[in-house]
Length: 203
Image (cartoon, rainbow, N blue to C red; front, side):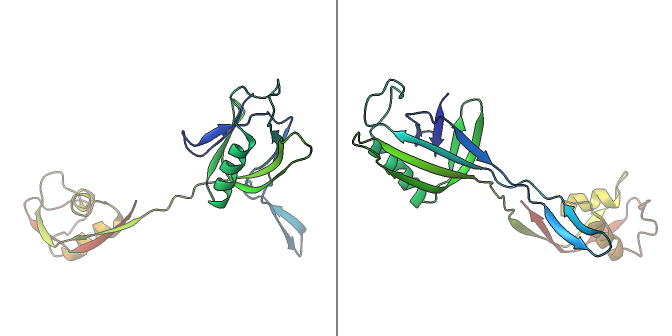
């Protein structure tokens, strides 16, 4: 079983000594409220973020159980400290078990004997990407439209405003009440006004 810590495809490493165990903990964000007539009520919330704790060591010696491609302890310490100080989003991977984007919450390390092996404890916290939508505005200039067979307010609104919602349909209807007597049956061949409008969209 291989344990990986990865920032990018090129900026990553495999733990040279597989931890004997790792701990995963997660809390569920339930809320307890007190209602006079009922007492305490538990309101179900969303699942919390997972935390993972790893404990092992970076060997300075050639142990039979260490990975053959191990590096010197300083390599791992420098890499982890760089990620920690840079608030780097990394990925924790156990092949076939877990693949989690995370942040490094804590990292402690030191020597315990004269072997120069570096023992460490790392706590990782799950990281969820929050997507933000960008607002765009498009100004539609006033124009005219000649009603053709099959035209509806929805189709016309979609053609000029990009959307066929009630807001845009009503905008066209109100500007042409003298011509459009029946919303569901537009007079073929008549020219109607398409009012100027600023259309807002989120991407």
